[in-house]
Image 1 (cartoon, helix red, strand yellow):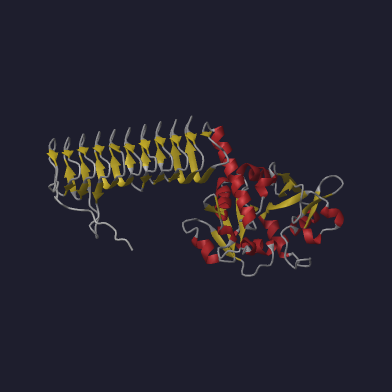
Image 2 (cartoon, rainbow, N blue to C red):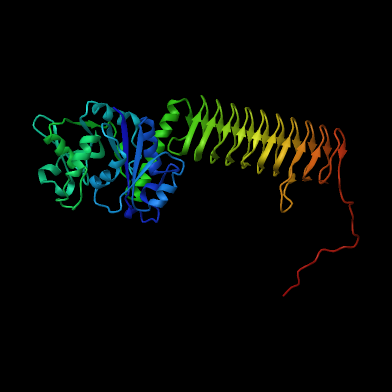
Length: 455
């Protein structure tokens, strides 16, 4: 049976105390809703309908390139009403899986178990047992253990409140029957809302089986309603990711002190020190060593490369056996060939550093192509911007650039050329020759340093 997914994302989230809709609050660098949509995509569903309400323009704008269907819930009349708003976009004779946009830690295997239970046209609800079930709807079973109803907290009796098995909010049902049950919902309850959970009783009355599928991990169904819960979910997410890295053969100095805000893949025997942040898509090779305090964004790092402490890499491509940092910054477009080096307080932007070349100290290289086995001295800069346009610098293989050199682009430095320290080079430097440009040294006899006057 084909699968349609309905994601409830219309809530305001007042307890967040934020102008941002709740489902756009960020967990591990992505909106809460993005995590839910990711797990929906992993189920290979046929379509996904997002029910939006508060801040709807912002919610839709956050996913401009998706193939989502959108359903507007103008009034917040309960979960049953929200799903009803989505049903015109859900075809008959499908399974409809309802997810919540503020429950971001669900995993595909858990949801697959639930969907499999409903393949015969029955109804499924994902449940967990909680030591403290306060605030959740309770799963009510008969003497034979069959699910008979879900009772919300405010409508529950004292006996029902003692039940520890709770409704996660995730329900799967055949779409044709679900549509009929939603049309028959009543708001005659303590909150004056149309409860989605009332379809369980309707299914039982119609003789349709209801399966309660228990999740293995209560943290998976954790809902996010305030910033404390958001912070707790962040810790859970990072713990989960750290364990996955450890299982993949990555060493972490402290699994509690790594932040992955996107996707991080790493080869065997890679080591990541404390307080490192990975954003976007990051790929690390085998035996990579990442020093403490590194921030790496949308970058690739080759085998056996060392990133020393407190470096920032953004949209950089670093080859094998390179040395980066400490305190180096690689900006978008930085490319390092095998064995290249960027030392302390070096900044590289939109430049290729050739094989075995070294840019060691206090240097800026921007809009440049540097050949192989080039040495760039301390304090050197490529003067690539004239106030209106960027210009390119080319340095040939085996060139030696002395310390404190200004290379005024556009300029070419020939292969094997040597540039004397302290020079400003604004025209081509011939291959294999020494080029330098220095003002004459002048000594002033009899000069005295100014002295402060006593007050």
